[in-house]
Image (cartoon, rainbow, N blue to C red; front, side, top):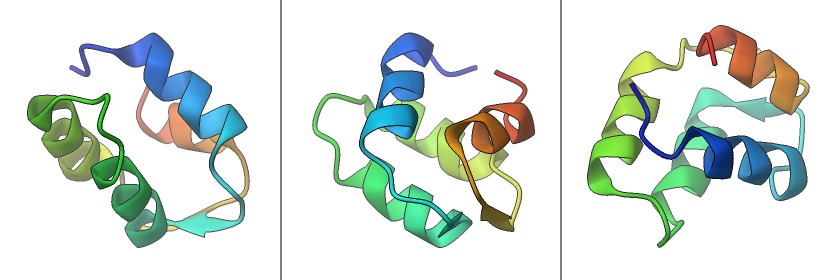
Length: 64
């Protein structure tokens, strides 16, 4: 499970542009210095392939 879930939700809502593919989201996540390597790995391994139109869709896909 992602450790810094609150910070991740904030980034998804405020700093990510949509629509975004899994690759877009993973690239953005990997460029964030305030997330641990474990959280980055968890995000990449648990986000299903697809295109997302909102932070809410991403959080639902991740069961957050």
